[in-house]
Image (tube, rainbow, N blue to C red; front, top):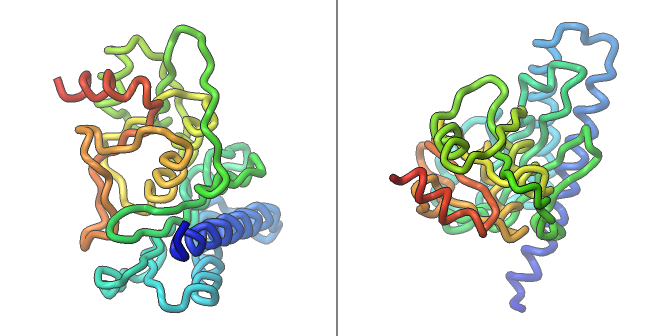
Length: 252
């Protein structure tokens, strides 16, 4: 194991701690009686989580670049050796509803366009999934696969996959919540074709890959991060034993 490997293990542990602390901040904010309007709560959640994460990344990694959904896009990140890609509040809409828990915090480190480590906190579950500690999921053997899809947006590719596999559709909120459902083994596939940003998937992809899952674009090509335009058209996270069949259905 090289020095860099040891550094990344330590960085992954720290990323998980930062994501966890941001998640606690967001849970506490929900209890603030002075904030009654859901939209104000969403705005405050985005802002406070962003400021919290940025302060800690600056403290521990002052030489690294950061791309955050809630921050200014400093193009110097394109020349940086290491870039953190952050979604301070993944699932802002869901966060505004007190009964919803399908939202989270994403922190990923990208080196040479690869998400080499990541942490996804799901505060409502009291769990932070980190690439340094995650274990392979245990999938149920019910005879019917499950595919995670958005509650509010129709995904054509997910519908095609579900039809081709006879899979059960499971609706849930944020990208991280859907990806971590695969990491837990609650669902077998998460496929997205409606476009998203790099901060939506960088951390979930790093965690899913560390758990031994298949991660790629829906055409099977590798997921690459830290581009000038952070838009990412599509995503596939699934069990490795069904990946070939899923890709075949999509690419027919």
